[in-house]
Image (tube, rainbow over all chains, first blue to last red; front, side, top):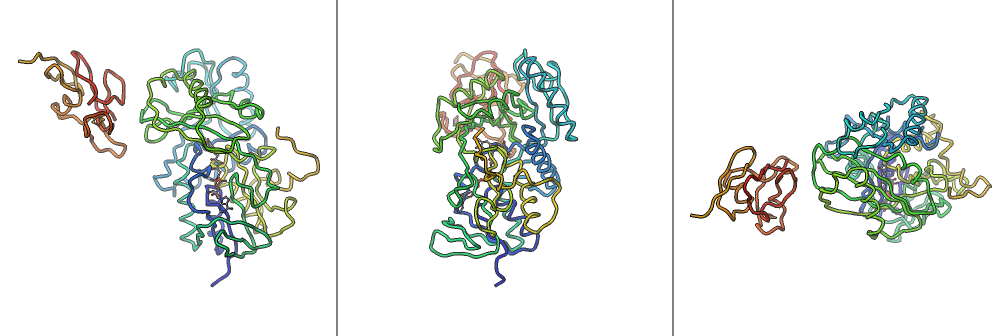
Length: 377
Length: 81
Ligand SMILES: Cc1cc2nc3c(=O)[nH]c(=O)nc-3n(C[C@H](O)[C@H](O)[C@H](O)COP(=O)(O)OP(=O)(O)OC[C@H]3O[C@@H](n4cnc5c(N)ncnc54)[C@H](O)[C@@H]3O)c2cc1C
Ligand code: FES
């Protein structure tokens, strides 16, 4: 049999996207999945495909990845439930309204269309928000996807192009050889670690888990039209020391409401913590009092894979490992669903020595080893 | 003769005996309690609050288990879509 051209460890949304891109190149692809997706971030996340402007590099990657999603939409099966519902960043007061203006300008400089909403525009767009809010910023190109189905579709496409799945855990990866849990090994000139938050294969990835809670409601079609996120989210998402919650609510195609979100560092269990979940729900009730009459079906947690500088690791492991065969696509924090298809293209372009649509330098893993100690900031 | 009362089910007035559950009234009226996510009409199954198939909109509140509610004079009930 033809030898493998690439081995990919992990088949979350990132590994599946990478597998698809590699298979489309005509490569012989092996995917080592460690079994089911249960426990992966991909089944736990929210599926908001969102352009984020917290740093120029994050803006470039999210905007590029979102354009790749839009290109893929016509071929996505219906079960992936892609819906371009748009995001409204909700401003509670005048200070946050000033922030809306600033972000409107940042997006505009990036060539992205947004619309500033007055208090009455906001009330008309989302009648279930409480009165007295200052306004918001509408980002019409943002969307929502059911990401486990999208990951399954990408993996299926890879398989149709000949990719082989190995449902085992990898226990070691070095110099083109991947050792598997059953004692066998596989070889390929390239090994991609798309391992989410699990960095046992390469601890130098320096990934920390950031736990999050989500709850989903019964069906209330028409209750909500856009994904709504409080503008204070950016402040709370960047706090490291304390646990934080923010109002974040998403309309599903079924009429269900997916409500987030919380962020906790240094907590790697998957237990539901009622105290932080209560804070999260209180926050949502503060913005949308009508949620009081909504019945909740299920709550769960997941973990985000945070790197020291909040940017993902995409590219050769050079600098973190003395090994030319190792490549990384991990550490996507709260944006892995958005960024997976774009990251897959950056990685594959780097592997074949082709230029990418955006500058890939900010995401190169070697930056973590740039000498100066990197603080979790 | 039991005492009768009237309620509105999907816009039509229905008269039932006092003590009738809302799910029974919907059966009498021939109306589904809810429409499933794939568009199927549904009605009560267990009659004891467990299966959630009898959810309907009662006095404007969606997802009320109608097998656990008694009809009241002037109540409005709609199929939960
Ligand atoms: C509460 C919450 C909300 C979120 N909301 C959003 C959102 O709205 N938008 C967004 O873009 N992102 C969101 N995210 C982030 C997103 O879910 C993740 O960034 C993304 O799913 C990461 O995908 P991944 O493929 O890198 O990792 P994973 O999905 O974790 O997949 C990694 C896979 O690799 C496997 N694996 C690891 N090590 C090995 C090994 N040694 N051998 C074999 N297999 C291995 C694991 O079993 C796992 O299946 C959210 C996350 C959370 C927790
Ligand atoms: S009929 Fe089963 S809950 Fe009402």
